[in-house]
Every structure is written in structure tokens, then in C-alpha cells.
Length: 246
Image (cartoon, rainbow, N blue to C red; front, side):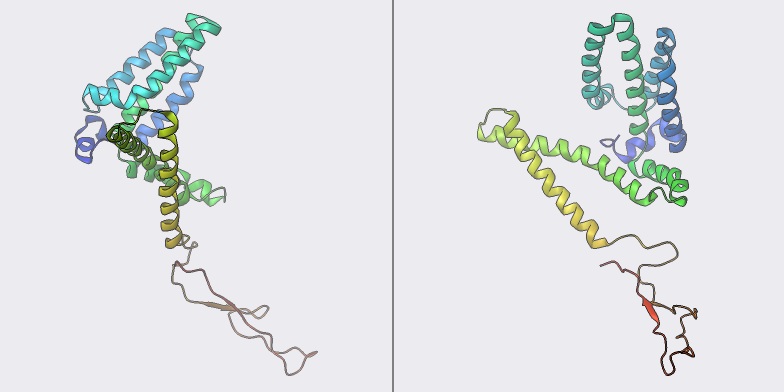
């Protein structure tokens, strides 16, 4: 998980499993559990997810701290499911969601963010070859999204501490307004930093590639000779200067 240190991740038994295998198993579970509606099978999958959590090597209170919010949301969903479709359906839905949450928490707790984004970038390379997306930009977006999760938690803690020092009462508006402002400021600083780096170089070109001179019809970068219908004139060469990072 993001909060876990590198040493703790490296010491976890589950960390010895390649990140690609863990993400593939998690994706397969996410797709397969949707078609399983027998409670005993889901209970078995839930037991395996608990074993995966134990294999992360984290203390129970650390595991619960990372899963508390998702489990509370699942509890609300279970209550709604009981009200609308009955207890049997609620048990199935709850076991599906909790199993996926446990497995996902186990994967993120035993893997570094850089390793996961590298695997995802490699998996997206085929889509880049056919022009659907840019694998590097997609992995950068994922990394930034993951990194902003603990930053938001730190901002919330700082705002609440400042309100407590001032003796202010806890209010949703008093918390939300400065939080949104701080997030926007951080996002603006991050956007400026990425803009200063410039776009990634095109395939086959470095960021400081030399200018390439190409003619309109003669090719090979040489000026074309004048045609018979326009004596004394030469076709101007076209200079293509690639964009360089600022």
C-alpha cells in the first residue's frame, strides 16, 4: 500500500510474487466473481483473501486502517441490498465486494507504486502501437492519481489540526473549502512542473534532435531544380524543426 514503507514491502512474503502475476490474478478475480452467486464459493474466496492479507506481513491495525472506509461503504451497500432484495442477495454482494477489497489491499500492500505502474505501462504498450493511447502518459496519470490519495489525507489532517488549535468546531464546509483550495493549488503546481518538462519525444527522435531538411518533391533534403515552365526559380526546401522540451 502507499503508506507502507519500502522495507516493509520488501519483507512481506507476498512481495516475492511478481507484480504482474498479482495484478493478473486480481483482474481475473474481479471478472470471475461477478459470475459466482453461490455463498460457499464466495466464502472460500473470502478466506483466501484473508490469507493474502496475512501474507503481506502488516499488523492487523494497519490493515484495518487501510480498509476501514471501503468496508463501511460495503456495509451501507449491504443494508440497501437487504432492504431491496433480501438477506441472501445481500450476503452474495457483500462477500464479492469484501473479497475484492481484501485482495486489492493485499496487492497494493505488497507492491510498490513504481512497480505497479511499470507493469501497467508494459501491458498498455500494444494499445500504443495501434494508436489508441500513450502508455507513458497513461502510467503517469495512474501514478499521479495514486500519489494524490495520501496527499489528500495529509491535507485533511492538517486542516483539522489547524481548526482544533483555533478552537473551531468541526464543520463540513469549514473542512471542504480549504481542502478544495489546497488541492487546486497542488494540482496547478504539478501541472506547471509537467509543462516545464515538455511533451515526451516522438518515437525515433530525441528531445534535442537536429533539424531535418526535406524538399517537397525531390526528397533527401536537397532543393529541387527549377522546372522547365519556371526558369531561374528553385523550389524552397521545407525545414522541419521538432518541438524541444523547455
